[in-house]
Image (cartoon, rainbow, N blue to C red; front, side, top):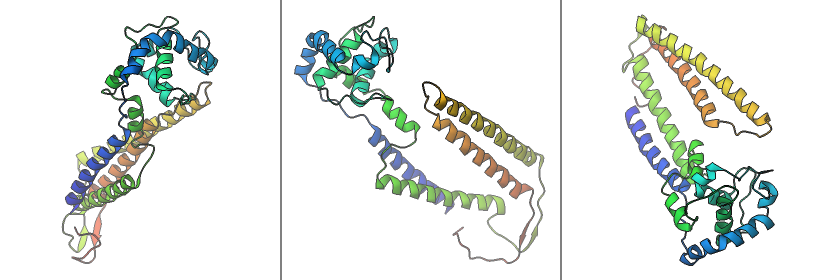
Length: 279
């Protein structure tokens, strides 16, 4: 039964990951041939007008030198990944909101203006075809969501599956631990245990790792708090915080399990075939 529960949990976990991946998959970009043809002609004038008369220049500077927003002049990052500029304009990032007031032609015009001004230069104009091709790669927004483990918007099927996976996994692990620690059959009497050198090494190792992960967790928390307090706040590394916290709990659980199995005598008063669990 423990193995049946774990296998069922694994199957549901695969289904859950499929749902998460579907939620975070980038939406396909509709390519308008007429808009693509006009981009090369329009961006020097329309793009400049949108940048200068909109909110772009107010945050990034009239010459892309930066201000409230990051500097765009001579920015090798955006030149290497032109689709990044499009995604930031359309979706927003950090303190910059999505520029929903711009139509498709204006978005491509101002993106190309930024990518071809103040020392920036791309070989070919940014077009819907380039955006479409970039979606074959992993979208930064998808990576961000996956690093959080789940999408921002959870729906009822995901909540149900996640809860059921955790219940089945817990049920199965308790069963496997019970068989490992106490055996399949319990006989009346006192059960003496004798530790082995390997068990002693195991419990020392797990306790040492518990201390190590505790130090790493505290150091990560200090780093993240310092990042929040900095002039330019840095988002905390929640993934590493969660990893260290989980490893602390796992190492403590392993230490307790080793102690139970190899260092603690047990006593069975009555042999009873019935029980709360089916194993």
